Length: 181
Length: 181
DNA sequence: ATCAGCATGTAAGGCGTTACATGATTCA
DNA sequence: TGAATCATGTAACGCCTTACATGCTGAT
Image 1 (tube, rainbow over the protein chains, first blue to last red):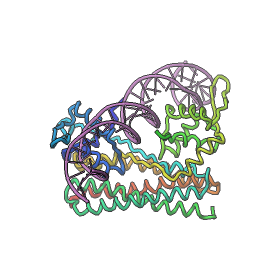
Image 2: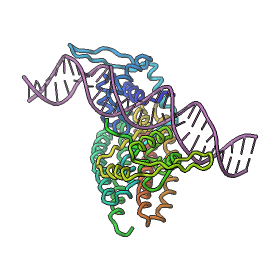
Image 3: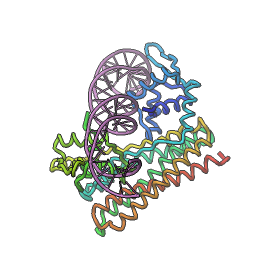
Image 4: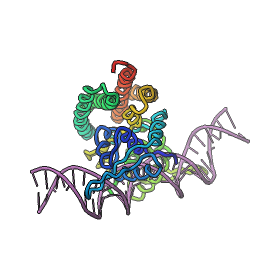
């Protein structure tokens, strides 16, 4: 029923900083944002069209030569919508971790399978954590710019939680490998 | 294209322990599982029907009096499907945290709004953490039962990460409230 | 000349939520 | 008697993913 499509807010948020094409938006989302929100072309382009229709954003053609290129910028109305959303206290936070599902039902296959699944998870987390730390390090240096502080805090959330994940992985593997229990 | 519906695995996992009705399944999911996976009646009942059709589960009518009641149990084929899934190394783990989205774009509304959003998040995490710790405490006492260890590890994952969240919340609020930056 | 990357989109299908519809039983 | 809980489902709708379709540009 109610308007739920959060991709609109991602787009408005990105456009509040700079003018972007759909393609650019995808690239931005694939960066630091991808750790907590995803987007696809089949998602972004229709949203862009809808939002233009409702006056939240405006297109302006920046095609060069035969290359089609449509940049969008946020309107006053779009900025209001974004502000309203930011001021709403309720937020929908969801985890969908298949790894945890497999862990929960780990008894069906036993310890070795579960340990392996944890290891696979651990490897991914280690890889992502490296990236997140890189983001953090770079942002820390430029934290005097107001916007950078928000980006830093977001990346830092990732670092804190991923480090907790790794700590848990070690503990869990140890428990699964011990014969005491 | 490919079969993706993970609710099937949740159901198979639950039925691997005991025979359950759709209503029971919903209640189980709303317990400890809800921290990392959700389910609804509109989700569960159709899945049950499909899975019965493909022979992964079997119904047997346990109606009493005028009260309709259909319990399902897992079949050999269902147990195989569950085992195959547990043995697949790739797992899809996704975070969709609207709070982080709001944080990332926090510059639009400024520090007070962002601090408030973090506080709302913090309150929810504190509440959930209490529950998770309760689960952990209860399971720790009965960890000699193999299955309980898996449940314990899952809840423990929640405790570790939620504690990291809280740690981050304090740090973030402090940074946002300071005038140094 | 070819390939990676830039750039815009559509179509089909799957998954899931919410609301609705219906009725029985238990307990205060 | 009325409310809460048990119990099963369907329908509408929304959102997203994946795959497809198309074409330009710049670098090797």
